[in-house]
Image 1 (tube, rainbow, N blue to C red):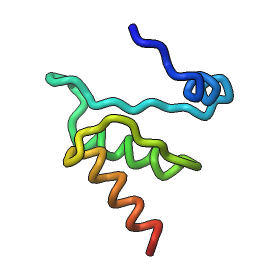
Image 2: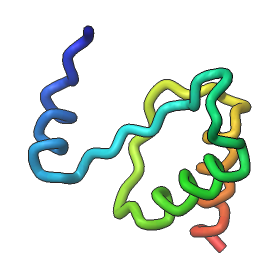
Image 3: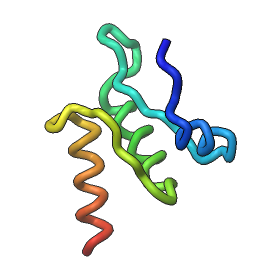
Image 4: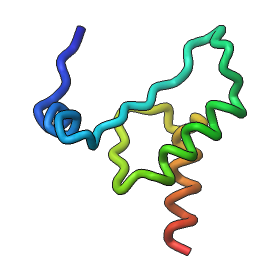
Length: 72
């Protein structure tokens, strides 16, 4: 198992870190519920740091949409 970088460990210790990962194939959680949950969390966040995500995936699209909304 890979250890978290020091910055993420500090954020975790300060209750500022939430990791969101894609749902595994065959998960009982449907895409609509997953999207709603991710959007809810992202709207509550004070800041968002994006790691490795699929550039054209659902999470990337959601983040792009929220960033455009924030600029308007």
